[in-house]
Amino acid sequence: DSGVTQTPKHLITATGQRVTLRCSPRSGDLSVYWYQQSLDQGLQFLIQYYNGEERAKGNILERFSAQQFPDLHSELNLSSLELGDSALYFCASSPRLGNEQFFGPGTRLTVL
Amino acid sequence: GIQVEQSPPDLILQEGANSTLRCNFSDSVNNLQWFHQNPWGQLINLFYIPSGTKQNGRLSATTVATERYSLLYISSSQTTDSGVYFCAVRDYGQNFVFGPGTRLSVLP
Image 1 (tube, rainbow over the protein chains, first blue to last red):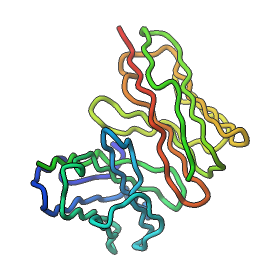
Image 2: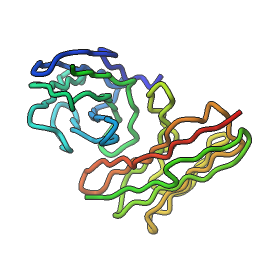
Image 3: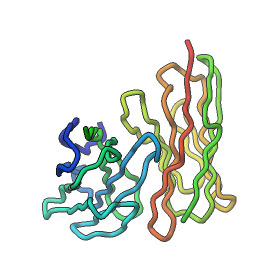
């Protein structure tokens, strides 16, 4: 157990809908990262927050957004969902910028 | 952006055999990690190793940052070692990139 928690574990929804994925980092970690793992694109970095502020942006679609709250938990919002958004979404945390990342168990999203 | 390659893409071993997995990256990095993704999808940290050598039980890793590669050694493999091994790097431009992975199958 890495200490990073993600909810829900599984999510099934329809095209066009909006969902929110939640992540709680390890105690004391200030950085939160979001990744998408799909069969055709592998593991892709989406976005990083550090102590509430956006720090780095990867291949995140405009339909996706994220934020980190004062208690350091983070949410990833996915809207106007498409079939291709079906994937495993991971959250990771680290104590500081550029440090070792620890991954949560992931949220498996299925868009029908 | 930075490119990360891993070899071999697939590896099948008999239990007890040793193996070496390689990760090549195209630019300087300030962070390199090795992960094991088990058959249940969980990503498990193996090593945080931007440079140097580390060992943890049957596993060890070496990163030669100046030559832009890292190696993961697995000795006396067990069936529980099966899964996909990823290396992931962060370059100085703050980009995080995972390699495509090496899929390892250890047969009893």
